[in-house]
Amino acid sequence: MQRVRVGLIGAGWVAVNRHLPALQKIPETDLNLIWSRDRDKARDVAGRFGVRETVARWQDVIQSSEVDAVVIATPPVLHLPATVEALEAGKHVLCQARMARNLDEARKMAAAAQASRLVTALYPPLPGLKGDRVMIRLLHEEGFVGRIREVRITGMSVDTDPESYRSYRWDPQVSGINTMTLGMWNEVANRWLGPTVRVAALARSHRHGGSEPMGVPDSVAVAAQLECGATASYHFSNWAAGSPGSRIEIYGDRGALIYRLFAEQIQGLTGTDEEFSPVPIPSGEQRVQDTDSQFIRAILEGTPVEPSFREGLLYMEFLEAVALSLKTGRSVSLPPEPRMETWDRFLN
Image (cartoon, rainbow, N blue to C red; front, side, top):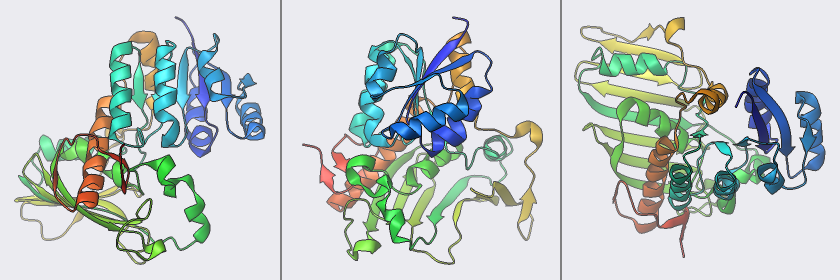
């Protein structure tokens, strides 16, 4: 294969602002098909990015003989069926995060990927990438914080616009056990700190005024034990004016690191330092969101691509354990067995 013919399922914000601009820049890529529920939107996006044709059904992208690889850029509800059907049709798959609605679906996707031996990958969150290599170096090569003891992860903001809650993100049948940026920041934490072994969770839906989530919660607190021995806390809310925003704080017996996720800034304190100072992210160590290019290179040359479906399973196991803890009122060890369909509903 000298060229990769790509079909896109989905024409939303991520497709328009991430996938299509990146794919356009890869000389060996042909953008052949695109589907959207809104056919007019698909035509508009196709015209803007030179996609050859739009189709009426997402299945038409997969079944086309003019497509070698499928990019799935839809909400989680379509990730399992589109991934499995594409792999069965012999198409390589790049799937938008979050991986699936729940762990049961994620495991089915991973099993299909393993059986196919085709190239599969997920799309990483942009926050946390720029300083990713620096954080790993400081934590695991230089011992900047010493032994990691405490971790605090926050994703807090204020969103009182009632229209925002009309988004698919607040529909449990579409999003499953995903909410806010909880899975995204866990994905970043897994890279830097390793996996979680146990969680206990509380949550509520402020917009409904209840202590239990109705559908998808908009306030979540999680206490967690990490495999490295550290204790971690997660606190996520859409109702926190004046909050510290999105950050990962790591405290050890020698120092501390704070990563501001959307600002892509690192502050550190180590040894005899008395206050935090900026930590530079050298240009040679900066990581970028180049998964589209990695995906095409993997198809053409067999080179690695990340995040893998295995990395996706790790954060889906975390989300499943959080949802299960919330539903049962108990702490949950990881990896859990798949039991949750959505945040407040068990699988049949």
